Length: 406
Ligand code: GDD
Ligand code: MN
Image (cartoon, rainbow, N blue to C red; front, side, top):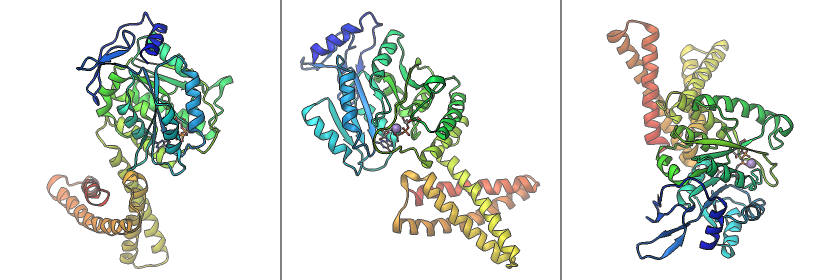
């Protein structure tokens, strides 16, 4: 191992020296690999420093995982590397395949997560458990070509960068084969908004393929949220001083299985961007909660007018509209806002009853807050009503977080 490390470092010599890194897990001080590729335990024994850790988050990639590992192996012939497969307990046996492979090749490790699902969360967990000086996150479905890694490491070292991302070639002759036209258009919109949030223009801020220095990652990791699929964006946002650049690559076509990008992932991304646009003042889940509340107002009026047009008595129409709106709010919050704590079965039924009770109290809170504001603060109907809605919403959000989706 040490010999391989030295051979690898010889390829990259002449680069700027870097700082020693303290491994938070083992407490071991790693020397810069370009120097010795080794670190020293207190006992004096020498262990090799792994140079590149590849974090491959997986969810149902049984058909792709072994070809992926094989491709990495042939692309990184002369490197010191390890692969961490971080699997969200896929039902198709992805983790078992990776684990079996790792029995004969110790460079392949498998981490299984049980509690929730998520690409960014899995990637972060893998990065925190990795041993490399350089941490790479890449897809395991064959769409990210491991051959690009060599260019990325070379560029990172030569330009002394902290992070390098692989940008999908989106235009012209290299139009992305792996993206459908609608995904392409959405991707362009996402790109512009992301660049706006970051305050710098990237050709592909939404790529899921990048390499970052481990020491820089450990510094910013506590600031990361849960951006769903867009970890790169969150990383660049969390530390604006990162020296970053892009390397182009051709986004491949998925071989087996299907994309996990769904409406929840898109929702998470939109609310994440909006939260960042408020400078982080409004948390992601509150933004989602507000949107759902807004849709509830729409439901309320639709049901109300529909019933009134059938000559229902006002009080009946009003009561049913309130019930419908609360029900749709509950279901949408369960699906979108608290997706990671989603209630199912009896838990969902109980949660629904609690949510109705919460909404009933909310109406009282709303009316009293509006009345108080109107009588004591501003004598303007619109502002007082707004105050009532604001108090009601914040109160509901806090209680929902604490007692329903806990
Ligand atoms: N552990 C874990 N948990 N892995 C996941 C999850 C999850 O919930 N969801 C997806 N993955 C894994 C997949 O198994 C695959 O290895 C990788 O993450 C990418 O997932 P895909 O479902 O193939 O994503 P995609 O091809 O639609 O999106 C890719 O391109 C986007 C740009 O268009 C990803 O690289 C995105 O990060 C990228 O933004
Ligand atoms: Mn994919």
